[in-house]
Amino acid sequence: SAVISQKPSRDICQRGTSLTIQCQVDSQVTMMFWYRQQPGQSLTLIATANQGSEATYESGFVIDKFPISRPNLTFSTLTVSNMSPEDSSIYLCSVDYRGRALRTDTQYFGPGTRLTVL
Amino acid sequence: DAKTTQPPSMDCAEGRAANLPCNHSTISGNEYVYWYRQIHSQGPQYIIHGLKNNETNEMASLIITEDRKSSTLILPHATLRDTAVYYCIVRVPISNFGNEKLTFGTGTRLTIIP
Image 1 (cartoon, rainbow over the protein chains, first blue to last red):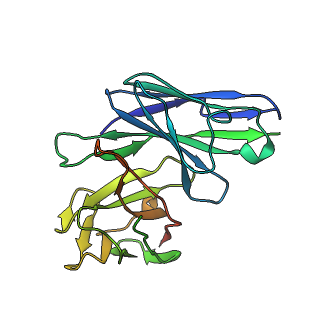
Image 2: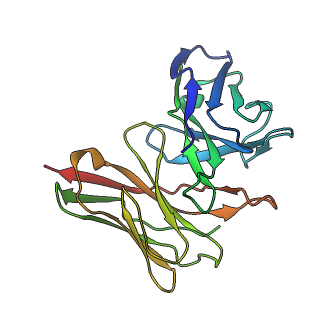
């Protein structure tokens, strides 16, 4: 499987500031995904990031609020801009990866970044 | 998108087989069924996936009905560490590249009882 790391693992931020979350993968992957998990809720997809092109955002999420970079095949960042307490969530990145034993792409997740906005 | 329906919660005795059901009656012919679990606030962990045949790996078995409208995830000998939220997901295509997004439902909260 792909091994994914995220930085920071958690942070406490002030209202109105921005935080950039980094996602690093140990293999080259085409597609990376960013999810949000609000307290007590399931995961919601924010956007899909393909290397070399603009990220594709899901309904309800916009680039100005959640700009994404995808500079190469192993790295991506998500910025949470102009934060408010409603942005307090766990943010997770994931990648599509096909190991030798698998017939189809499987999505693997990072450990998440727990964000608290005061 | 094909929707899945899972019971919100289940209990299972430690050492017993945990059988988690999932209904996906609107699944399309080329859509796979994936199972993930999430142990308290960690990133979801991939368990197993299948198209129409039963599948088994070191973690679990996946039984898909012949009409593909439902499936069951089986953890053969549940341990306390299997306590988690289990998600059954039908994977849908999002582009011509064949890379597909996952749509998470609310899952089943499985509690293993000592």
